[in-house]
Amino acid sequence: MTRRLTLFATGLLVLFALLVAQAINVQWVRAPGLSSSPLNPRLSTVLSQFPRGEIVAADGTILARSVASNNAAYPYVRQYPLGNLVSGVVGFAGPSYGTWALEYQYNTYLEPHAQPPQSLAQVLAPTSAADTLTLTLEPALQRIASVAMAGQVGAAVTLDPRTGAVLGMYSNPNYDPTPFTSSDLSVAQAAWKAATTADKFGFEPLGNMATQQTFPPGSTFKVITTAAAVVHKPALLKKFYKREAFTPLPDTNKLLYNDGGTVCGGTVAMMLPPSCDPGYGLLGLDVGAQNLSETAYSFGYNSTPPLDLPGGEVNQSYFPPAASFARSLPTLAYSAIGQDNVRATALQQALLAAAIANGGVAMTPHLMASITSPTGTLITKYQTSVWKTPLTKSQAATIVPLMVNVVRFGTAAGIFPWGDNVAAKTGTAQAFLGTTKYTDDWMIAFAPATNPTVAVAVAMPFQSDFHFGATTAGPIVKCLIEGALAIQHGQPATGTSSTCPR
Image (cartoon, rainbow, N blue to C red; front, side, top):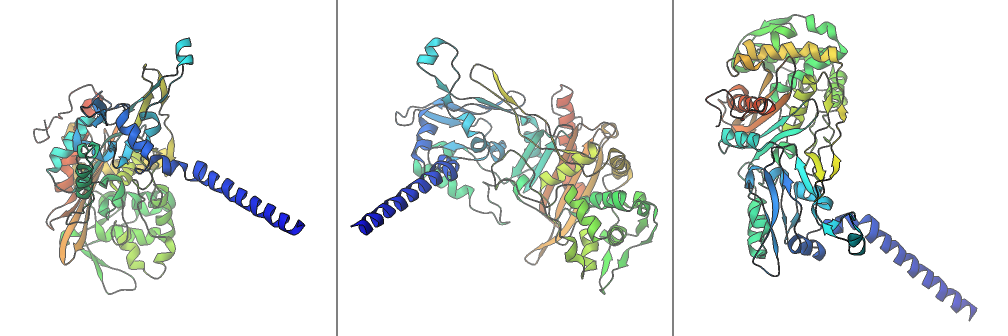
């Protein structure tokens, strides 16, 4: 009898322990995922039964709001006045597929929740309401990017280098968030299928190309190669590299040709403006794998930028580890000019430009400016913080005039009005899609060069072979810089160039 009681008690204890473990698993470990899961009936009920908080742009434009519907079962529906212009950042909230992007990231503020009592009546009968999320995003810059891209695949990121505020983040392809708000499941399912079907390049509209997709950065990476020399081997800045149209590389019979077969060479100051491939390949070999890798990492490569979007919506850029070059020195030369296995997002390259602009300090990028209660009380305001410090102020100052000369007489000559005082770097990476040769066209830039307040990166992948970073990405960068500077001076974001969207 005693043995049976012991076994029975032991069994009860085991069952109780399993019950406690499962309770902990559900209530703590899995709670965040279950709470936000589109299969959670509470979530779908909240998304349709009660009004969510507004999402507002920096200029006061409403980006998302809840309005009354004629459906008694779903009395509220989400509206997105700017549609696909901001969908990659704002996301959606609907009864069938839950929340996405910022609607997910700040859901605890945007869904109705208990408000602090303001009176005795509210103490006895607590009220529930949603907060308002105000962003750093400028709709005018979204429109500029959209019109300038003209439906082409691409991504553009505009930052305030002083604070890390994301002023613009536009990607194409994108999607219309409105069908996701429908109470008709078939409508939402059709929208999901369309938004998750890849185009001929493999991109799904539901993704955010600016933060998720990586491409070879081409010669924009030469800014990092220059920084590696500045930090680790400053004597290389004065080294004169032979003027030639191509250069042999160690351990191979292959030659590294300059783009177009033109002759180039000289010191770093002479090579960066015309974007000399042979010279920079040799510079990368002289800098060394360890120093080049460390410098790339110091700018944020192989790290996930801490942007306030849900996990999985912001990806790392990639630079190979130093050990991978031990038996492949030619690869190091190509990596130094942003090709081979090097890959970057538009966000990462915007942060690169911003770090140079901000005296060697990359500020943490952010979309949230503030959150306020239904009564207008400030709940939280974004506090600026440093993400990476790859350079000292004097080291960054060494690179700025080199990038200014890219605009004055280098590969970006003739793109920007002289008065804009822009520093930039172009990039044109050659690649293949199947047997078809194409280019990934880039430009990074900041302005005004003497006191930068805006930094931009534009990536235009899968361009025809005769396209270049200067000709494809350059005009878009120009319009975004002019638009951002106009906004900062309290003027309409039309820019001064007749070629920019108005």
